[in-house]
Image (cartoon, rainbow, N blue to C red):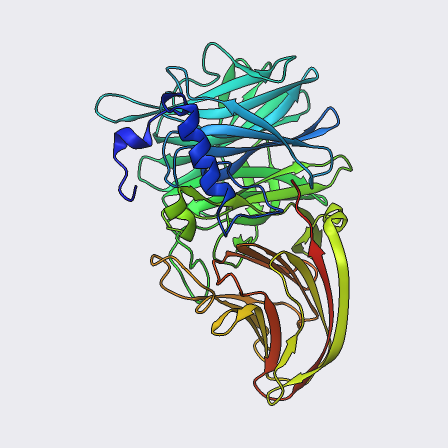
Length: 493
């Protein structure tokens, strides 16, 4: 279906037959663009990662899910567990929209531990007969059999005064014997903000107040807030909606980024640096972080965006999650690196090195769709370097490095099927340092490009020709000496 009615969008999974559900899953399994080492939906649409936590020896990853098609409809939480963040066990549906408070969707939230038990806090979305929204904040607790039981009543039944019903996406943490939750919210003047609640027992919550930042008129809604300490600094990650594009910044329909500084929980004042985007590619939104078993801060995002069409929409499925990234602060810079465990997926190592220039386009014999490619720049006298990934005839995705400007440009003009809603084929990232390395993860229909060991990241979905499996490089002028290390990546099924 191209145009979904409201009734179709809010149809439950239980309203279709087992045969119909199997048919939806088969569309995914037979898709030429199905991912192999990323989490993607069994059917329908995946969006925000939720409830990320390491608990009792296992990682829990949940995601938003509309099972019946590639549209934003009635949302569920789907659940995976893992012992290493590279192999995942399918745990099925965790939360279903089955109460008065979440009748029109189990919206985003987070996981936390209380007395050894895993708890989930999420936003329940309900609509009245006139389609007016009602947001309530709900809690569910894991049972011995692995299912989740919701509290009978909401933890927070009403929005705070002075705000609209756009009040959602709780991220919970414990500090000094109390529990805190930060929410994205919209003021009555239709500007975005974040508010914090506190509780002694997770049953009764009190509004502590609005976070005091220098971003008082910064978009119309802040989604998916995440507040944490990293290397003795405070970081606030959020997804503001309604930011205007300026000078190769904020060009996606909605943004995800962060501020770094000093946050005072008692006053809620945040002294911070400027807002920076987390990812400079086409498809990244709604990230959430958690602490892994080694005490490291890990980020996973939604590799997609709202209100954008994708090639797989015609197959009734859409989107995936990003690879897990380890966060750190180095020289005042937030760094994002693929987690070390991903190296366990490597097979079939190949290496090559040599010069590339304008007159000699180097086509390397790397064939495949699922790979990790490390490119080290040993010597560079070129004005611009062109790296063409997933190449076949006129199909390729191009990464361009401008030596003078220190910019990385990701160009999808010839990368295959792209959304008509995305007007510009390029995204640009300005580097602090000269380009020394690219680390590219290619799955069937995505690229995650880590620049200079995590200084910048560019994430994008691509839907190229099936024969687009090669790689080539050249320059605008001058020459560059490059070293290549390529690994095939095995499936995480």
